Length: 224
Length: 123
Image (cartoon, rainbow over all chains, first blue to last red; front, side):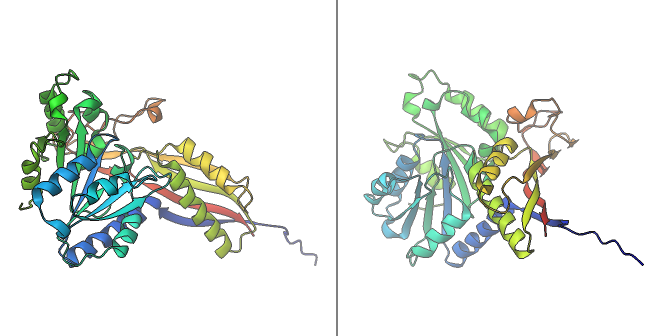
């Protein structure tokens, strides 16, 4: 009998069902366990470029006066400008350069934490890359997420980026002293914040002058 | 906005899987992207094809399926999609509020995934 066998290459289906964002979430959980086991409160600071993330961290450090009990991971594309600015406040600082990447992710934080001396550290600030879109999709494992916006970004930032503000535990409005010049009404921004995320406290500050910073410290549950 | 890094991760996964399964050539890749992620399917697939060049996956078809959002509103109890059925909805950031009562207090059940579902290889 003549048997005809199919020859040549055959196509095989390989089912994967791999969720690429889930990997970040599981690494973030690992980071959280690492922080918990060392009794470190980790705070992710997010906000757009120029909203005042570094200035806010500096102002908080100045008020906290905790010296090397505070550590900061400064995220930026390629420079060390932010880390140098924060270092002057006496905290331990490590710079994470993301290169071309628009956000920090849990894996970068895992690596940074592995390189840091964390003995005696009680609070860890993580300054995310300036961006209101991507960081929202990549939790890092921090206990609290704080989003900074500023009046110089105009009146529509919250309504344009509801996703990241909904993720926030605390919403900070910076550069409040410039509201009039920018023709921005802070009460309207507060209403927007309440609509998007009524649980998050909305705190108005002037980070450069240190105004309103103690309210943030309270909201974070820290004691100066 | 982070399409390149996601594409890079997908390409690594595809090439590793092909190697593990002794695939001589990758024919196609199926992705599923949730409409509530900030990922553009077109940009992801563009970068995947670029990164596939000079590999066993060069020229592979990249299919992207959108996973529709599914939410539960804590305000009015609405359960369902986000009302994003118009043709060009992919160009808009879908509002994060309930399509029925406009409340932002919603629980997202589906739509934030980015899944590498299946690849096809020639052995």
